[in-house]
Length: 87
Image (cartoon, rainbow, N blue to C red; front, top):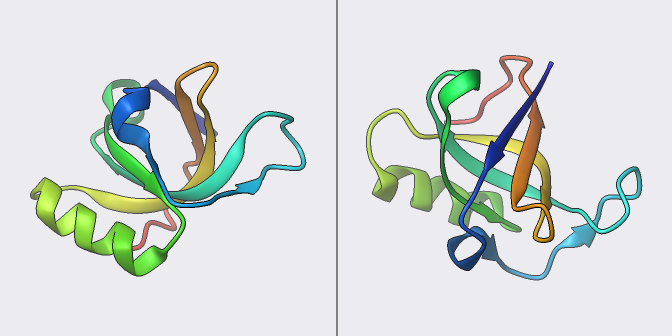
């Protein structure tokens, strides 16, 4: 299952990202998210996992890391919701 959410483009990107080869115009990175799939909060997407981990701790309780893809044009972040979150 994919999780799709609207995000604030001004706050989303942190670093130089690699392109998502399966989705032209999208980039891949560590998303910092919180909440159930139908009502997620988004704290940003990061190139570096440790930087994302620090951002999750700073964002507050319940935020977790998930690998995913981000589109600035669509202002969306998607991730496989497989339970493989990194906290």
